[in-house]
Length: 83
Image 1: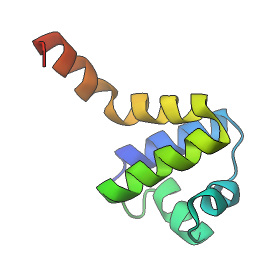
Image 2 (image 1 turned 90 degrees about the vertical axis):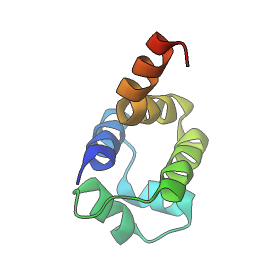
Image 3 (image 1 turned 90 degrees about the horizontal axis):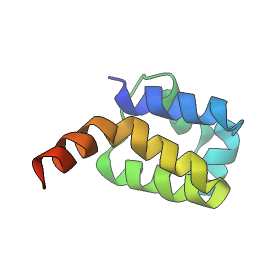
């Protein structure tokens, strides 16, 4: 477990976004956000998209950082291959 949780934790701490604030923006329980944050469970693919959408509403730079941290290596390797 963990890549999404690690990215989420870093973003929330960097941009001083509380777990509760993200939960409200996502219309989910704070306990769900807490489980991702503490790497107890991994969010699904659809939930990753919801996290990005909620972060965009709260702080677009936070959304960009989350995507970079979560998908950065994949994006870089694909761009190097010309995909």
